[in-house]
Structure formats: C-alpha cells, structure tokens
Image (tube, rainbow, N blue to C red; front, side, top):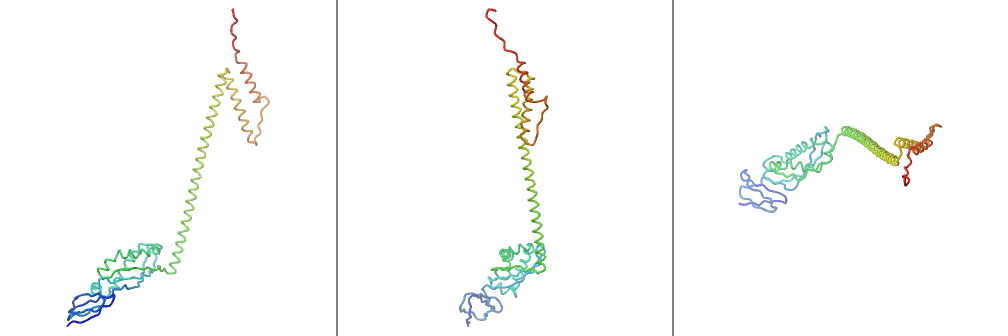
Length: 284
C-alpha cells in the first residue's frame, strides 16, 4: 500500500528501505513512497551560517583571533547524511585548519589587507575536499577584523612605529647621500668645464700671439725685437686685468715703466730696419 509524504521547499528527503538507501526527492510537494520505505532524513538545501573563532599565530609572531563566518550549502544530500555524523562541524574544522595554515604565512598587516581574498584561497584549498567528504559547498567565507590582545597591540604598534622611524631615517640618509653625490658630480662637471674654458682661452691667446708675432716679423722686424714687443704687450694686458679687480694697487719702478719700454722697443725696431734700396741712376 503506497504512502504519501511531503517535501518542502529547499529540502531533500532521503528514503530508505530495510535500513538501506533507496532514493532522494528534492522537489517540493506531495510524493508517494512504496511499501517498507520510510523517510530517513530531511536535509536542508538552503545556505546555512556558521560562526567559527580562529586562533592563529602570524608570520611576525603575533597571536590573533580571527572571527569568521562560514556560509555552507548542501550540494550532495546522500554524502552529507551518510558520510559524517556532524558534517557542518567537521567541514568547519577543515576550513579553520586551512585558514590557520594560510595566515601562518602572513604578517598581521597582510591579514588585514587580505581578508577579502582569503576566502577565495580557502575555497581553492579545501573546497573540493569538503564537497567530496561532507557533501557541502563553501558559498562564502566572511572574515571579520582580526582581534589582537591589548598588550600585544601596544607592542605591535610600538614595533611598527620604530620600524617607520628607522625607515624614515634611512630614507633621509639616502636622500642626503644622493644630494652629496649630485653636488660632487656638479662640482666635478663645473671644474671640467672651467678647465676646458681656460684651455680654450689659452689656445686662443697663443694663436693670437703667434699671429701678431708673424705679422711683426713679416713686416721686417727682427725676431728678438718682435719678441720684446709681445712680452711688453702681455705685461700691459696683465696690468689691465689686475686693475679691473678694483682692490689691487699696481706700482712700477721709475726705470721700468712698461709704456716707456714699449716705446723704446718700437724705436729700436724702426732703427733695426734697413732702408729700402734706391734703384740705380740712369746711365750709371
């Protein structure tokens, strides 16, 4: 004789006959079961919420509590019902163990920053195993802000403050070092450019003196006299440049006046020149 039984929304009904699994019905409404069959379990298919408290030690040796909410849903009613006497608890233990392993490789700051991605890492790590063993799917892992004991928090804040101070000191020292290097390189470049300018100035002066000397000699002036005139000109140029500074007094001895010497050298040069030869008179 058949019997009627009801299946509610978001529910799976497991039927057994003589203690053995017979069928699963998960469509809401009235159903008929055969003789000697009975309802062994009614498995909820909606998403259930489970709170767990994870106590963990971080990579930087901080002991913290990580409040966590698990959203789980039955995806295989048969496995859920037969494989474990308490599938939610055992699945929660698996998840917290995976979270502890993940957070042990993180520093405290990283846990704060990775709360949103930590759930994805947990599903990737143990999601398939939980479905296979307990018939449960991890819908979501919501991780609240990690809780640090007050004394540990003070020590952590102090250590972080010291770390930031040390980092700022190092950055300042590095910036100062870089500034010193740049200043030294600038001075080196300035000296190089100054040296090149002096060298170019000297080359121009030497070329100018050479041109003047050649002009004097080519005009018929003896070499020695041309040399004396150029030397006197250089002395006069030097006196002029020194006088431009405004803070230097230039004196000359009475018998060594450069202008007088220059005039004497020019007169000597004129005297040394041979008069041009006159052409012979006609008829001689």
